[in-house]
Length: 276
Length: 304
Image 1 (cartoon, rainbow over the protein chains, first blue to last red):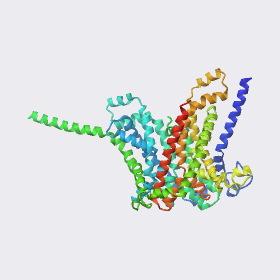
Image 2: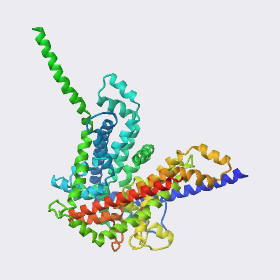
Image 3: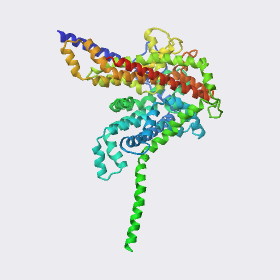
Image 4: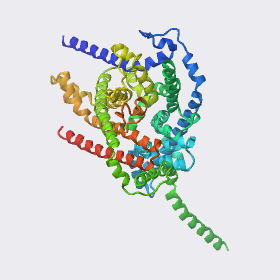
């Protein structure tokens, strides 16, 4: 008797969870569906939830009338470059802080911990001035360079390297390997999952960054997707199918990264929050 | 002859040896230097520079002179600044605790699932990885005054982001929809770390589901909850993107937050020195409030 009541309660909870989940994902479904409607169809009441046949006019229109592809290439270039260098530098620095003894080690580690607590947005004014001084405003260098510094990645890698048993390093040293080999042939493969996870999270974060590109770019061809797409709305006015098509196009890389690597993204965001 | 040659070789080796030991001591810096030089250039230097700038009347190009504490005196009498602090505080109130609570409740719902788990987790988390501009597009379409599905469903014509009373709660709601997935993930991890034996033992002792929830789940999840609360607090004080896109500080400046005010002063009106002062004040507020929260959370934690 008791177990039966329990399973009814359980079923109710599961149903409630499912309804919540579908409600949560609904806005994303809704913009995807709207992007496949013609402009007239978007404002029909009552709205259709499964438009058939799908209409790709708004995608074609967005791609043909705006520099969307240029922004796409900009954003890919910026995100890939930032991810590559920030992960490489963080791996190297994390390895040194975790495994090597050298003068100034404590100073470096403390300053990285302090740096991790400084909000980037508070540094925007002096950063802009500095880059302006070197004529790097509205350039790829200006977009990329400040985003490479991610103190948190160093801290995460240091913590993961701390957990590698010392035997691995000692064995490699006996075999005559130098630190470069040890890092890239021993420590990196051992921590491949977290490196991959941090790379995906860094990529998504850079792709999505809005604040810095907003400040450092000022001409249409230099914009990244998140800033550029807001200009489309200003140009088109209220054209919902086109707005939704822009949104869908802009989300494809990060959404694909998440759906393909759900486990790694989860691991990455948790490591960033301080949970292994 | 041979002896001389040998001693020469020996001396060379000694010299090379000491050079090598210095090189060996400094070799790790090759690993640190790439990151650290970027760190000094793009983080440490700007952090020091922002302090100096707050004491100048420099424009956004950096041209200006030292004016002492004048910016701070202006700031303390600047009604718009204090209004922006209040608006930020209001946004923090509307997001920090609700976002943590909703994340916790979703995690409790998700963690008991088996087959549907990955799908449900994905539904709640997917919004988090979208760019803020996509969130903005979604929000203006779903919440559109005339054709938005929410207003159609409610049979109303509410202009969510143009209403002085509703604008901030609407932005907060959108923020929770966007970011709660992360909190949920952290809570799911925390819930999984609670040993199953505790629940089994409590069930054997006759504790009901609700009692197990309040006397096992809640106290044991508290460390995660306080972490999430702290992360949220620091994050939400830095609110800029959603406001910039959804309301641009309006209507009637009712949603102008500190960073938006800084952006306007610095990048639109060219007052670099004053913007630096605002940025520093924000950092100070964040530090003070996080310290206070840290204290409160620790005090609440000790009795349990």
